[in-house]
Image (cartoon, rainbow, N blue to C red; front, side):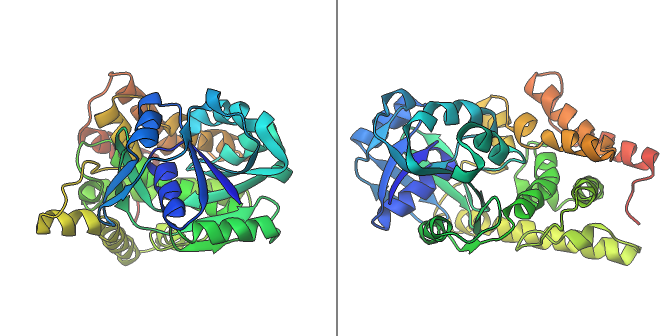
Length: 359
């Protein structure tokens, strides 16, 4: 199978690298011309959680240079670039070609399906993570599984083929309900978005009780929207939805203990390598924090997590906490709000006023 990675940054670049190292036929496509030129001439260097890997010169193009028919497209651009990326490749899809959304977002699969057809769209969700550091240089940051499935839930030969491919990157699960898994990532995402309100490492922020008292109600509010849509949100190695509906103070303490344990698990590469002095991580927070603090650009919150507000309106579930969180991120992007713990204090005041505090 010929694989085209569209969006060769953190997720796409890492995935393409491991597929290439596994002997697959991979082409990298990215709008960043400097990155494409580096891939073509010097190749790709990866450091971080899986050690140092160097790949020689790769087949790489900018979108406007693509001319060959495309078979399997792994779309790994940020949510705000989904429509533009799909419009740039849909005319090149072979009759049997298809696109896999290897992204984080609530409606990316819908956007892709609207452009190329639902019958040529698969969903996939990476729980591993990394960072684009410089042209030709990526950092592997978080270890985690990846999920894939047809939008209609069927187990098809192409879904099995993509499952085989992605298994070369990480532990891969072939699902009959990828939509529920996407909802799980977005509900959990309320916690991830909130972690970007402070300029500290992800695990430091979320291990703090000031953050936990806010992220618990935020995630619970998102789960209420999913439930109203009839979604049975699944758990995973970093997320257990039932814990976000505590009935007693002891239940709340169990939730907070779970959060501390899972963020420590997510951060173990960072902590262990920095203690050993083997690698100093450039990326210390979420992708949102990375965009706000290091890239100095708008994050994908408006396009990746913001649609939660639309989904909530469809079923009449108010989401004042998540809407306020989104507004805070937009204000930070527009330089109208500073990063800091005062943002959590403001959210906690709102939570108390609305009677949404955990027991």
